[in-house]
Amino acid sequence: MLQIAICDDEQFYREKLLSLVRQYLEQRDLAYTAQLYASGEQFLAQYENNVKYDIVFMDISMKELDGISTAAQMCAFHNTTYLVFVTAFIDYALEGYKVNAVRYIMKDTLDTAIPECMNAILQKMQLSKVTFCFMDGERTLYTDNLLYIESQKHKAFFYYMQAGITTFQLYEKLDHIEKLLSAHGFLRIHKSYLVNMKHIRKLCNYSVVLDTGETLPIPRLRFQTVKEQFITYKGSF
Image (cartoon, rainbow, N blue to C red; front, side):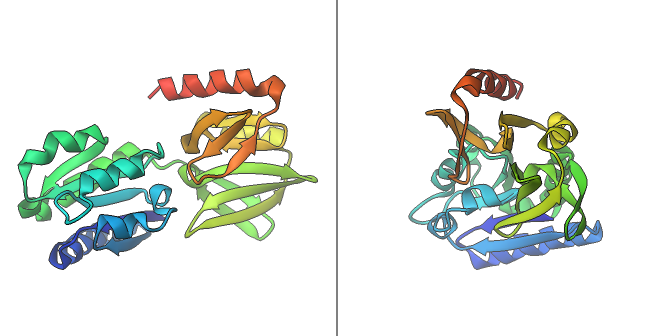
């Protein structure tokens, strides 16, 4: 399920963007949730918004905290959100790209720009999926939304971003899960933890800090290897 946020201080444009995005996704039978925000402050008030959304449509020229500043705080978490700036003023285009905006679209072109923008984003996302038989039944998960897997007493706990953090359980060795997820950017940092490198904010003090703020341990003897693998991963983008 795609998680989408629309942040604009004008109600008309919030609702217009929602209508166009909804029309695009429903025509393609794509599941989604969409949340509207009337200011940058409102968007940042919830800590999890920094990492929660797959796509964020952000107005640049908002009162108080503008879209560039709001996006900069969100992007400081090094998440994989696709950021789209929406504005009536072309002057801000270069500033937008400094915070890795994937698109910059004008408010007077929304009807034609939104479908093209969504096509480009979905092509970039190439949403990878994995299927596991959990204790409550078979589920297909988006790998981008999978934070990490923890092994405890013959069980594997999958920590998954889905309207908050959801946990799924199954009986499986972490070694086997590691082989299945190795092509999706997952790193074994500990005998009990397999972490999605897309959600690692930093390495420090023999631990990883995730973009949710959670900290997981790295054994001293494994730290250098984990650090090198993470650097190699970041350098490939």
